[in-house]
Structure formats: C-alpha cells, structure tokens
Image 1 (tube, one colour):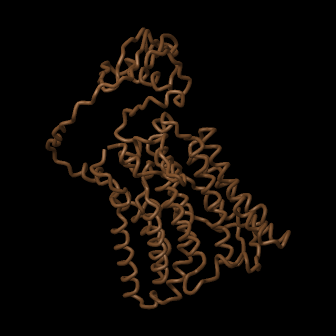
Image 2 (spheres, helix red, strand yellow; image 1 turned 120 degrees about the horizontal axis):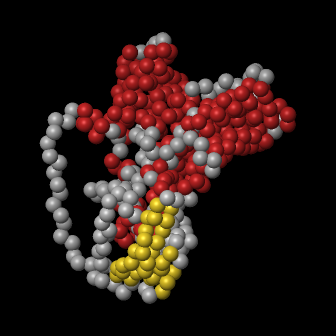
Image 3 (cartoon, one colour; image 1 turned 45 degrees about the vertical axis):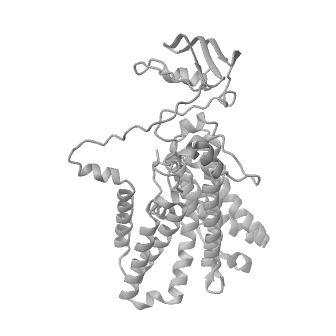
Length: 457
C-alpha cells in the first residue's frame, strides 16, 4: 500500500507551492517595487487570513468527501446576525456569540441534511447558500450595519507589532487543524470517511456524526470569518463573502486536497490561500481586468488537479508495455493458534435471492482459507456475517467452541476484517488503516502513532 512508514506530510507538494509563491512575489516585486512595501504585504496578509481560515475548514469537509458552497453566504448571514445583536444590545460578547453561533447553526443544518437525510452535499449546501444569503438581505434590509465597537473591530483591524491580529488567528487555527487531522482519532476518522465510507462504517467509525461535525465546524468558522470581515470593513454587509466558497475550494485544491475525498493537507491549503492572495492582489495592483484574474485562478485549479493526479496525465501518453510484477517476499510461517471460528449451516437471504445456503467450515488462527466463487456467489456476505455487519437467518457462528450471535460490528470487534479495497484511505499509513475504528491512545488521549506502527509490524 505504501513503501514506507514515513509521515504523509513528507510526500506532499508543499515545497513546490512555496517555490511558486516566492517566484510570484519576486515577479510582482520586480514589475512594481511598491508591491513589496510593508503596507501592501500587510494588506495581502489580512486578506489572505479570512480566505485561509475558511479554506482550512473547507479542506476538512472535502477530505470527508463533501463540499460546502454555502460558506460565503453563511459568513454574510453570521455577520448580519452579529451586527443586529450589537445594534440591539450594544454587547460585543453577544455579537461574537451571535456570529459564531449563527454560523454553526447553518453548518449544523448542512450536516443534518447530508449526514442524516442523505442529500447530496452540493444540493444541500446550494440550498443553504440561497437561504443564508436571502436571510442576510432580509434581516438587514439589503443595507450594511455599521459597527463601531473596538472589541468587534480588534480582530480584523489591529496589529501586534507588524503582524495583523487576523493573521495570528489564522496561524492558530492552522496549528489546531494540523493537530486535529494528524494527531487525533477524530482526524483519522475524517480521512477514513472520505477515503471509504463503507469500510469506515464497518470499522465502527461513526460516519454520519463525522460528516455532521465537519459541516458544523465549517459553519462556526464562517462565523469567525464574519468577525474578521466586520473588523476589516467596519460594518456587517449582506453581500460580504460573495465568491468566498469558490476561493476556499480553490485554495484547498491548489494545496493538494482531492475532491474525491480521503486526501488533503492543511499546510498545502495554507500556502494555496496565501498564493491566491498574492496573485489576486498582484494582478489587481497591476490593474489587470478582473475577468483575466478569473482566468488565471481557473488555470491554477486545472494545473493543481492535473499535477495531483499524475497517473491520469501519464495515461494520456501511455504507449504500452508490461507492468513489472514485484517478486514475492519470503515470510515466516505463522504458528497455528488456539483460537478458532467455525460456521455450521449458515444461511442468509435477501429479497429475491438466497446469498448463503448451509455454509459450514472451520478455521483456526494462523490457517488460511480461500473463498472461491463467481461475483454474487455470497463471499462478501459470508464475511459480513462473520464480522457482524449482517445477521444470518439460520445456522451458528462458533468461536472457540462457543456459539455466539452478532447484532452489530461492535459485537464482533474482536474479529478483524481487512475489506476488499487497496486502502481505506490513501492519506493514511498502513498502520493507521489497520487500526481505523480501534485506534490506541496515549495517556493524554492523543493518537498513539508509535504503538500503531509497532503493532502493525
């Protein structure tokens, strides 16, 4: 599955992105030295901070094989909620709560529609995009709401030294997201759900709750982005965030996140967001028409997608030839253990078909049993009965001489099943794939990666 146990971070394209970013800065600075002025660089950082903040959450959503095109409208609606709360109460704390809480509510709505109702992520977030934008325009009377409270303006306007506060907030969120995705069980679950939701569910990962949670967090992040936007503009505007969803998705894709799910890098997204900020600001600085800026951004997406899928590009130029077959490794014989599983007269029927009919066999630890048969012969159904995914209609499952009944995969969690997929998630190591759903923890509750690697060997 992988050729080494190295961290996925070492196999990323971040160095290439950093090189492109530095080249872009150098080119714009060479064309117009004013581009490298402190004031302009601070302005780029402030604009990129909101993009990065939203893009981090978007990355998690896409890794979980979702999409959220409502974030821009959510940001506007959350900002209007904060503005109205401030106008009504004069309380900065209530305004902050209204922004983040309102954004989280829309995110929860997205997650519920997708995770529980089973609606397509694109359709669900398309609906909430229109709903949130309409709500923002309706509540504000299609007018901006002035905000003068220094607390509300602090995050989006003030600096600490030369660093804008918004950039510091984005950097903190970057660190938190990296830690969550790479050092917690929840982060492993996000990758697993996006890599293969069916196998993740069979491994006891709460797939629906993970999906709901990433949309909830994305919504709350949109609320935080609304606070930064209010601080930068000095008002809550119902049309704020227009096109932000496109920019966030672009930053994630440029950073190496695959729209098919299961793979993504929060560091890559951060660099992608900064690269977009530099290019957009640089082209605007040179008075390039906005329509050309859109073309440049679209070209970046195409290049990012093609370079992230080199196998597809190589297939276009493939001229034939045999694939090399790796030589088999010599492995030591596995000693036969004392544990055993026996099936006696196992049967399972589905509407219109009998998948299993009187299946009986036994296997002990260390033995190998092959299940041969055509497609639809019932091989997968048999394994799913043994692992608790299906309940047999008749017969017995006997473990170590005792008849048992499995009502769910959790009842059969002592029986490990590697599903018929090359990997549960392409962004996880071999060890992490093997331990999905039963991840070991350190004493502090963090993911014990060292133990996973040790036990997998």
